[in-house]
Each structure stands twice: as structure tokens, then as C-alpha cells.
Image 1 (cartoon, helix red, strand yellow):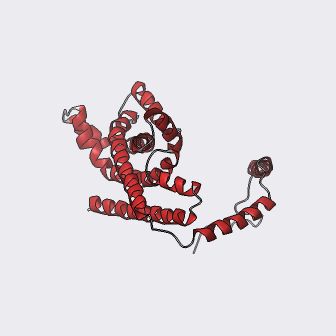
Image 2 (image 1 turned 120 degrees about the horizontal axis):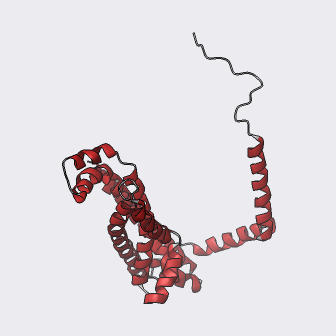
Image 3 (image 1 turned 90 degrees about the vertical axis):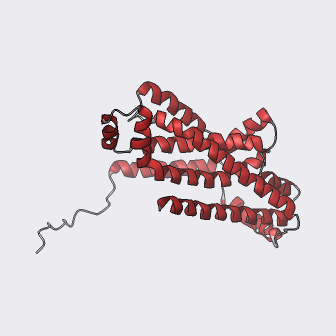
Length: 265
């Protein structure tokens, strides 16, 4: 027989507090004000649907006649993504270790965390614009931009993963008189290795997507080909590029799952 006391009828489940209700009211009022100030209205929305339908109609059927340019752009995006991911992970490993507050003093962690935050503060396209101005058009600017983005993302995750490890294993290794590097190799790395692999695989997948965007501002990859096709109103070729990008991302997703499966065994 259950001894749980019955819930009184006057108590309503999921009842919101007055403060929560006031918060919802403020949110709704702000959204209404934001939509009105940004000239967001129903008439423009309907017009946009009509224009979008015409645009999609002009995209069919996709045109793969210039497949050589397509393959060249996809290959360049793939190369940029892998190089940037490799460099980003290699740089993020020591940064993540130095940013871990359970292993390093505050005077070390805060400057390193500021570096990681700075790398994460800007979208890769913004960084790519700066890099294009610095080193010129081409894949080098895209690689630098994607590397900076990788450091910001992977460095933060590496640091958080290290901070969540069990300190008992660290203390056990330290008790043997091991050096700091031995503590890292035998106490830290075994606890976070699989998560590091997952972060690296995910960042490679993210860089595959971002490599298609940075090309729009002249930083190499298939994005430049896509932007040029838009400027020529060559929408059937645009659709072919979009389908190719989707295929590239799907291949990257399959490779990511395969890498995780291999290292998990």
C-alpha cells in the first residue's frame, strides 16, 4: 500500500510564479518591439515566400556541367578543414591544459582563458575578412580563420574536460614521484582521451561547414564558387553546388562516426 500523501487539489502543477509571469510578459513585449523596429511584417513575409518560390523554381534542375570547378572548390574546402582542424587541435591541447583550474594556478589559467575567449568571440567569417586583408585572397586566409575558430571552441572543451577528471588518479600518479609531464600522460590523458577524440572529430565536421562560408569573402574553398554563381544569377549551378556541399557534410558526418567507433574499440 502506498504511503505517499495525495496532492491537494488546490495545488496546480507547473504553476508559474509572479516573477516568471512578469518575465514572460517582458519577453513578449520586447519581441513585439524588436519585430516592429526591424520592419518585420506579414506583407513582406508573404512577398518573400513568393520570391523564394520563384528562386527555387529557377534552381531546377541542378547543372553539373562545370563539375571541374565544383570538384576543385570542394577539394580545397576539404583540405582547408583538415589542415585547420589539425592545427587547431595541436594548439588547443597545451592551451586546454594550461586553462584547467584544477591543475594550474590562477595566474596561468586566466591569461590562457582570455586567449581562448578572444578566439571564440568572433565568427569565422569575420576573422576570414581580417585574414583576407592581411594575407590576401585564397586558402591561407581561410585556414587561419578556421584555425582561430578551432582554438576557441576546442580549447574551451579541452579545459572543461580536464577540469572534470577524477583527482584521485592524479594524486596516485603524483605519489610515485612522477614529473608533471608524467602526471599529464598517465593521469590526465587516459581519463579524457576519448572525449578529446570526439571534440576533434566534431570540430573537423564544423570546419567542413565553415570552410564553405569563409570562401564567400574570398578565403578559398567552394564558397567562392558559390558566391560567383550567385552573382551571375546562375541558379541551377548554385543548386548543384549546394547539393555537393550537403554531400560533403554527410561524408564528414560518416567519417566522424567511423573515427569514434574505431577509437572506442
